Length: 255
Ligand code: NAD
Image 1 (cartoon, rainbow, N blue to C red):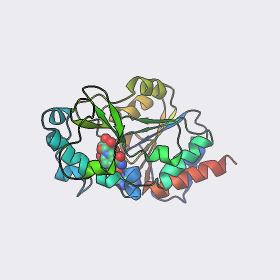
Image 2: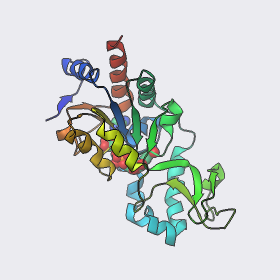
Image 3: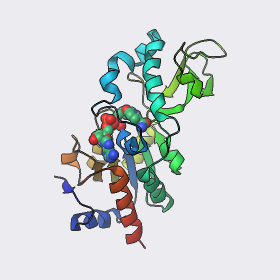
Image 4: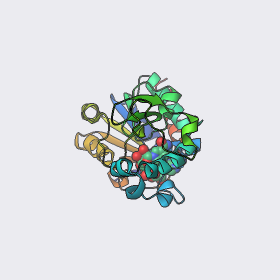
C-alpha cells in the first residue's frame, strides 16, 4: 500500500528522501506528464490529442504504411506542440541528480528530447524522438525541419521518394532498446515513476519488473494511477514542484 504524500513539508516526505539516499542504483521512468509544464500537453487528459486523433485510426504503423498522409496529420499536430520547448524544473532536477551520481539513467516515453536538453547523458528514448525523419525503405535519415509541419504533401525521401516517417515509435512497432532496459531494470533498486499514466505496454510493466526484484517504487503524478497501490510512495502534485523539491532535499540530505 503506497504511502501518500500530499505535502512536501511532512515527516513522510522526509522519510521518502532518507530512504532514497540508501538506494545504490536509482533510475527514473518518465511520461508525458513531466513535460506538461513545458507547454506540451499529454495525450490522455481532456482535450489531449487522443480525443481528436484516435490512436488506432492515426497512430499505428499500418496507417503509416497504407495512408501516410493520415499519420502525418497526427504528427503535424503533435509536432506543433513540441517545437521550441524547453526543459522544466523536473527535467532539470533529474539532470542534477544524474550529475551528482545519484541517478543511473532516465527511461522516457517522451519524444520531446527535453531530458537531453536538460543535460541528462544516459537517456533511453523508448518511443524514439521527434527531431529526425527516416525512410523505412532505404534507411535515409535527415533532421526534421520546421517546414515539414506545414500542411501539404507528406515529406518524401530524397533518395527513393518513399514517404518519410518521424523517428517515433507508432503502435504496432517494437519499442527501442528493450534488451538494454531489461538489463538496467534487473539492477535497479529504486524507480522514480514520473508523469505517466502507466498504460502503454511494455513500458507499463517496467515498475513491476523492479518491484518483483525487490526494488522500491516512488510515483510522482497529479493523480493516482493503476500503479499507485503498488508504489511505496505516491507524491501528488505537479512534477515541476514535487520532483524539484524531492531532488533538492536529496542533494541537501547528502550534504
Ligand atoms: P499519458 O498522457 O498517458 O499520461 C500522462 C500522465 O501525467 C497522467 O497520469 C497525468 O495525470 C500526469 N500528469 C499530467 N500533468 C502532470 C504534471 N504537471 N506533473 C506530474 N504528472 C502529470 O502519458 P504517457 O503515460 O507518457 O503515455 C502517452 C504516450 O504518448 C507516450 O508513449 C508518450 O511517448 C507519448 N507522448 C509524448 C509526449 C512528449 O514527448 N512530451 C507528449 C504526449 C504524449
